[in-house]
Image (cartoon, rainbow, N blue to C red; front, side, top):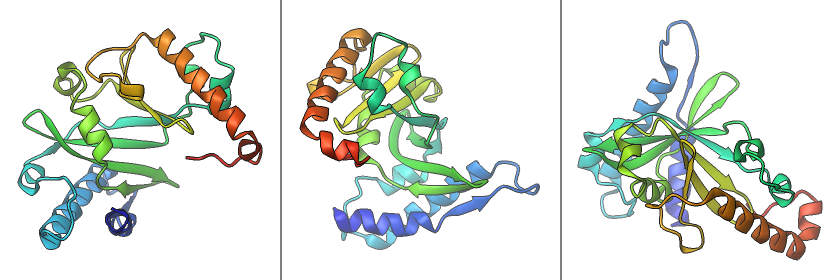
Length: 210
């Protein structure tokens, strides 16, 4: 698996597009190049690697709306007091682009923006692919336009915010069911406090586990 990640990372980091007057949609160009590169990897790698992506499904897949990826502020989570969840979130760090074929998510292409350039930073994320396929059908039918991915560092929770509802597989929850946000946030806070007490010295030095 480490070899797969390393291989994809090398390819992905070579894909970038600058914004200039001649490019009407540089992100779209980056997505298309990412798709082309992934198709080439799947074709040339044969059975050497299992990327979990069907080449034919990818060939006929279209890019859905880009999904913002945000981090939850761990220190703010420790002090959480029933405020709106959006107040704990970072600005968008990257965009997760679902590649969809016949209403099913085939894979994702991750796009970053740095100094006016769009970069493909990841070509396959099996977690996002499998979990987003389990979200309510309305998410896919609406082209994932109202979905935000939230990563909670250290306790390794991934939340999917769809409009004003939260979905997660954290601690065995079902992604098909909206969570009671107040209950979920209190559990995340408790787990964060436990983590803080266990790894306080690392956190003081600014060294997060993830």
